[in-house]
Image (cartoon, rainbow, N blue to C red):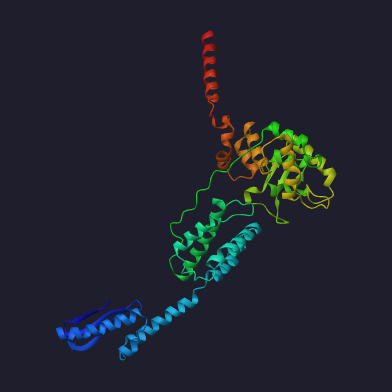
Length: 395
């Protein structure tokens, strides 16, 4: 809504209004009087109505005004800005191609799937500076209703991965094209604690005694080294040092090819226990002519899904054990090491953790003596102290 104002030095009236986010002042030759104000208000009402309807022609209304050229320049700048700001699809692809140089193959593959299968279908044609915080929250809400092939909803950690990628893309776009990122104060969803369903040593030994003999060595190594599925499936003979009794984890098997391990901490040397050493010696007789340690008949790494359905789940069913994924063998190794009193730092290195933090967070509740929740350590201390006092009294 515009105003009719007066210049004190000349006592003449002028228009004062907003057009295209610009304050416009246009001088008249009329002196300040009630009649002249009434006349100009009618003109101003007409201007306001045309602006509202997007029909206002500034040059026609004020042909001699210097504001005409100023507004044209500003409009051209706006148009140039709009044309230079890319769509989400354009910028997401640019960002991906620039960022992937420092990523590992598996991460490149995962980010590519998220961008192409989820993000671009939702935001692809929008200008990156037009997406709002509400749009992002709505997208996250929609993800929470997506069902996977097995019928389960996407997990909180899966949704968070999508949102983290969105955050990186919009933060970079905002920095380059000078707008405020819509990703503000959006917290990640709370991820439930990982459910650990380990096997006891008796259960592990029972599985090894009843599993198909062709795969006994494979599961022995899984149960007693804590290796990830991708690590044991990608294990090659050149990384087995029988002399030093070491398994050198250097590669992993993902999506049909050998890759770098999950992270730098995963590059490690695992000490062979007696059962693992014997298992690998026996396996050497079967697959020593191939590059990979555990293979099918063609010398290729084992297929994880096929192995689970054909070998793993049947033996659990035979023994009446609760159905659990093969990855629980890794967790089992950690809890067995802890229960036996091995140094936590040594265990963390064997597992490929960068510190003991993850070890204590995930596994400590399975080993009372580790966290002293049963009070036995204090009881032993008191008993030792009492015994020593009695010994002193005797002397």
